[in-house]
Length: 383
Image (cartoon, rainbow, N blue to C red):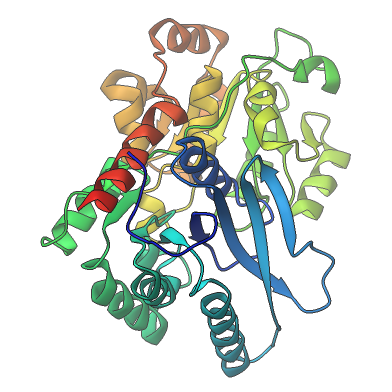
C-alpha cells in the first residue's frame, strides 16, 4: 500500500527531523534507510542543521533516495541566542517543506515536536515521534529546561500517529507516564554486522592468551573513563583498547604512554564497528547512573558487544540484566563499578568468556525490527 494522505504534486517525501549537524547520527541514518527501502517514498530527507560558516555539505547523499539536508542557522554563546537560532532554523524548515508533497514527518527529539507537528498539519503527513533515549529524563535536563521539555512532550505526544522507542523499559515508562497513547514500537539499536572480524590483538601486539577489553564510542564524561584507566593501570595482565574519540582522549593517551596494557584506536565506519569489537574478548559498558535515561538505556556499547558475540561487562542496567539473564548477570553485571571493577578484572578468566559464548543467542537484527516501524507508518497513513 502506498502512502496517499497528501495529494500535492512532486516527489513524495519522508522527513526525519533531528536538530544537529547529522555527523555521526547513526540511528537517524538507519531509520531513514529502512523507511526509504520500504518503497513508500520517492525520497527520504534527514533534516539537520548547518551553522553558518561550517564546511558541512547542505545536501549529502546517504544512500539511494536518502539525503542529509542541513538547513542553515547561526551559533551563539548565549541561551537567548541559541533559542533564536533554533526558531530561525524551524521557520526555514517549515518554509522549505510546507508546500511540498510530504507523506510522513518525524521528530527525533522532543524539542522539535512543535515544529514537526506544525509541518504535519500543514502537509497532511503522518506525524511520528522517534526519540533516541528517554528524552525528558536525560543528562543535562533539569530545572526549567526539564519542565519545558516535559510540557512539550506531554502536549504533542498525544497527537503522534506513530511512536517508537529504543527498548522495552522505556516503552513501559511511556505507557505509565502517558496512559492515553498506544504502546510505542520498540526498535532496539542493533548494530549492522557484516560477519567479519578484525584482528585487534595482532594490531596491538597482544598475545592471544591475554584478555582484551574494548570500550567503543565517545571518550567522554558519563562513561567511567577515569575509573577504567585506574583499574587497568593496576591490572597489567589484562588489556583495554578505546575505539573512538572524545574530550577525554588526552587522558587515554597519557595513560597509554605509561601503561603498555592501555591502547587507543581511531574511530572506524559504523558498519565496521562490530568486526573490530569481535576482535576483542570482552566489551565494556560502564555507563554512570547520572540520569533515569541512562539507567533505562540500551547503550550502543552493550549491543555492539552482544552482536559481536563477546560478553559485555556492564553497569547495573535493567536492559543489560534482561539481555544477559540471571545467571550470566552474576558474572557480567557490576552493581557498583567503582567498588567492583578492579576485582572483576582479577576474577574474570578465559573460561568465563567461553561459558558466555556457549550460551550466547543472537538478537533480532535491525532490519527485522524495523519492519514493525514501516508497517506502523503504512497503517497510520491508511486511516
